[in-house]
Length: 362
Image 1 (cartoon, helix red, strand yellow):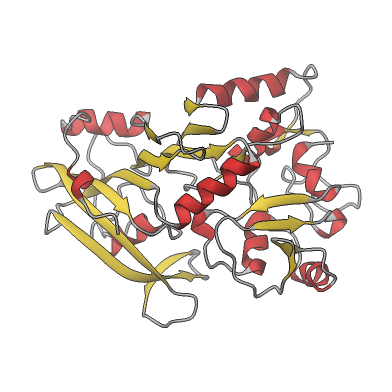
Image 2: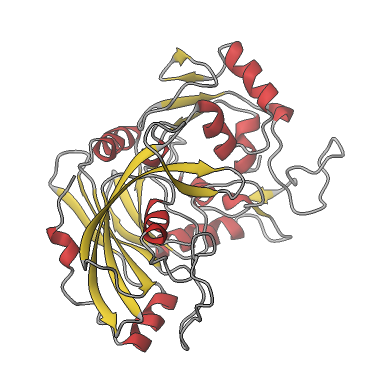
């Protein structure tokens, strides 16, 4: 059975990540199982097959980080996406038979070859590992989880790392598909629970680097807004306090270096972990991230020569208490190739002192 079809035949337990805090259960299912119909979900919830931390819930129940969602076998009520035009057994477009880890349709290859390739690829991303935890250097363009039209993703690739007891490493948080850098993965249930609590209590410290047009004033500051999802535009927007489903978001920023008045290298410390928070916040103050297809909103701006039109956002550093109380995990990710190229063109030195380290923690 293909790993991405496992949810059709077996019960799954998924841990709610830190950036899913406050999300409605129906929206959570839409995110993780985009082809599951709302009617089918209502039936599963009504009959008690979907549970959160063992208890019965409603589709409107809001989730907290670290909670465990019981996902029953979904059968034909949810059809995983297939390669374009590929019919499933019922004659509808659905999951193609014979797909491999990572949700990639399997090619005619020797058994085990693709699994070994995916495992080797994952191993090449490891920045830190012990028996409880891994920190991966997620590359630009690789999705963390599956969705409509997404066939290759880290959550699927992690199937290749199931241990002898069948336990699969768990994502503790998410970063956007086009964001590069540090991604924390728990190798045990205990580690997943403890690390999720660290994110929820804001014990985890995250530092991001971004490249933006212009130079923010002041050079160091705090951005505090409410953010809500714009369903039509499929992105986040600044909202008013009290608005339905608006969440408070706080980001500290600092200018590390600048190229005249044209470009700035920013270091960012998100206090909260809202969807697209850094991207929406920087656009809000008039300095959207270079290469951002959703939030870049400066008209008639031309990309400087030598820079690629890709999202220039790096999850640079992650500092979090070890789940067994053995000190702290402190890991930094290198610049992805397109950002390294931009830094070289602009004359930025990645070893320069980062002033965001002095920003408050809350």
